[in-house]
Amino acid sequence: MINVEGIAGEKLLSLIQRIENLEEDRTNIGEDIREVYREAKGTGFDTKIIRQLIKLRKMEADDRQELEALLESYKTAIGMP
Image 1 (cartoon, rainbow, N blue to C red):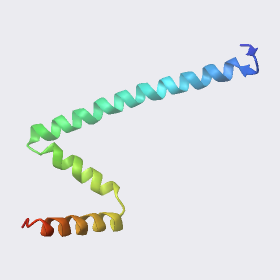
Image 2 (image 1 turned 180 degrees about the vertical axis):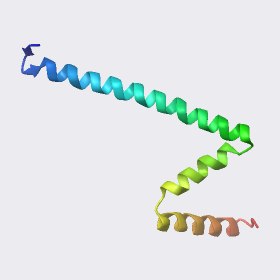
Image 3 (image 1 turned 60 degrees about the vertical axis):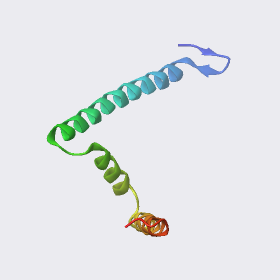
């Protein structure tokens, strides 16, 4: 490949191909994740709850505790048991 106006063609093509491969991998992973959710739903699990649990597990313990305490405070403030 040639350098055009200071752009290394081979390097540029390599980067583009890597991005394309990663985007394809991301698509495949997304399909795999959806399949696991379908399996969970077919087993009788609530996928909304599973998504919430995954979100909570990603959080640091301190952040999760702060969120839960704030949620409880708000629920109490509006009279929710």
